[in-house]
Length: 310
Image (cartoon, rainbow, N blue to C red; front, top):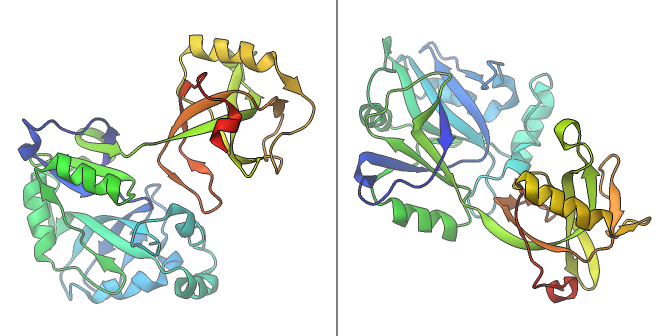
């Protein structure tokens, strides 16, 4: 079951919702047949068990009880927050079990469990979320590499402020009466991302294709540090067509032959411009290299000059 992007439920109805921290990792269904084995499957259905050997002891956590659980495999940073960039070092090791074992020591994975859809031979998808959640918590699944993070009923605004202040990716709001709908992106589960803002300088652009032919498909942006423009990422969403056309006019009026960034971005067909346009972008977090994750365009900042950002 997948969540639909949306706003935070209002104070008048928030007592009908539970709020969980949005984890940034690899979604996994966990199959525990009660015979001492465990199977982890990704959203695609691929068996990813061998990629995460530290999760194998979960097979004994319920003894002979059988269950199918829903959760997210994450790698935690030094402050206990899920860090997708760290987890990427672990993903894709299904066919390299020996390397997966070595990487488990360097970048340990942790399984965050948030739902139970089958228990002791009983299908639970028809039960409301509140009842499934109670059954999940009664399992007491807390171990060296797995846990059942808390869910808070109501108090959405407080949960939101906590997530924002802690630098978390956001929240998942789940209606207490929601059934589990496999394979469905449901409006009874809502993901609310914490978006941050950054002022950036446009140093180049990548031409669009199809209906965007002749227009920028994305702009290449950077941030100034000590007088140098360091590449911060590629922004390809957030404009109306009118805004994109206007931006194309501004970019095409300022071409240069030399890349203005300290390092040339790995973007095929990139075109460079004088780094004089300042824009504001939304983003969710940053990579270790400082690049913006999931950036989207917010607005031009004609009131700012590039030198103002140093």
